[in-house]
Image (cartoon, rainbow, N blue to C red):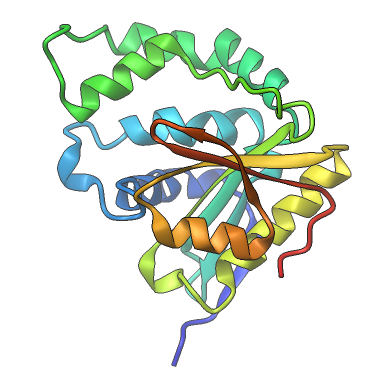
Length: 207
């Protein structure tokens, strides 16, 4: 019998559990724990800023025990969010994590370089799809419409803030995720070297 889950708002007490989920799904949807000496780095790059700057948009998938098994985070305004990250999120992390040696090609070193470089979204599609998101679910929570339920709440939330469209990035190896997003109605708007950018106009009801 499938476990029951509910979509709930993010609570500060969820922070560490969500960082763990980020790590355990961080290798094209698979567990990335064995790839990283510092288990917090993935969360610092791809999760923490949303919890700090946009906690009101974060949604959590909870099991019957109340523990998070998945999440969606994001923003309604990518340009404004990245500006805020430049001002308040990246500087303390840059002080904490010095740039690694150029010869260091470890996954952790790549993430530290991302911290120092920052993340900036570009594309002529961005004005049409200004919101973006990241969603991760542990394997037991995948399927049975749980990911769809999370995303529907996010679509509604960013739409209520005036976002006309939403985009996300997905790696080319994550075939299951690409199919899932296509089923929801997102389409590829730009191929990238690491994968593709997918997007949809809002309001969007998952199909």
